[in-house]
Length: 154
Length: 154
Image 1 (cartoon, each protein chain N blue to C red):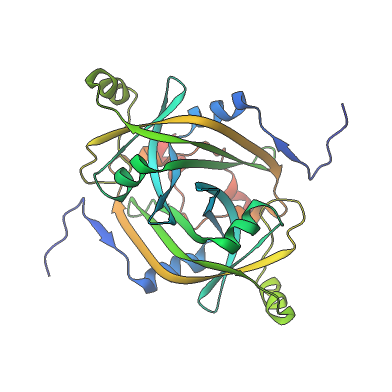
Image 2: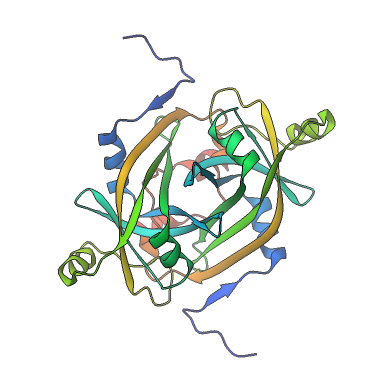
């Protein structure tokens, strides 16, 4: 094995990607709406190897029925000063089975935003890729969050 | 004016959106690659009302030359327990003017990831939309970040 250069981009294994997906709860969903990409933050759960999320009957619902989707999550590990990003690609299908819906509810699948989110969608993955890398300038990862999140939710 | 319901989704003004864009440095860029949406985290700066970012000559570069893009940022304000999301839509054009490139560098436009990011792209906005809302369950905003970010970068 060659020692990895400090600035190398490390490809994550599918197992690592799925583990990171399981640890996260909010992703950004990209869909194609009238030939234009659009992005929405969504809350999701991993259920039996696929991604389940809720949506209202708006843009997200209809476009995800017609088109493939991509869901991205990312994060920064201050211990190692490494950032990571995972992208899953797939097609979303509405869940009609009542037991499947109840199983998703049991996994604490709550919508991220208020409003009626009556549809449950399952994103069947046909590719999962991920990368981990040392950020060239860690401070650019800074977000405008006034962040008491970790205090609040520990 | 009607009092706003606590769970209302508040539309942000373009001015508020641009202010949030100016406060943030990392967004998620959605592009269409072979009829499939894809997402990449990118570091960006706001320069004269448009978004400037760097990229290598890979997928991001070529697809953004052919297709429209969407850039999304979001955050959570623990003071108000409200989350927000801003999406800009537009088309990216490569910056060839040396002075423009230098102006972007002066705004501390560094790539988020290592690797050669030789191309500078300007995303000319043709729509900016944003929403602010009380999260139905604030803890789902939790990310897997082991977060010393705010300590590190204050």
